[in-house]
Length: 111
Image (cartoon, rainbow, N blue to C red):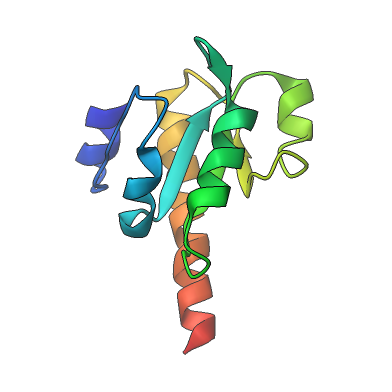
């Protein structure tokens, strides 16, 4: 995923750490969180990242899952959106492009 997104022109930071990831938020536009991780779940991760994010952060948090039930409740968990074609890299690239366009439109609306 990282190589494909970088080839599409995105700067990508990945981490497998369970703590200390909020330090990346000020430089991120989009955070993609896999719901199913060893030892914790995406709901726990989004809660801790939201709590540690600066109030002025314009970052989007997206859930990455193929679980239809989880995808349906992404907003209740605190996510801004959901990428549901887990494992489909071309679909992920299209979805990331769409999320970035949302950020660009928000920035234009503020001008």
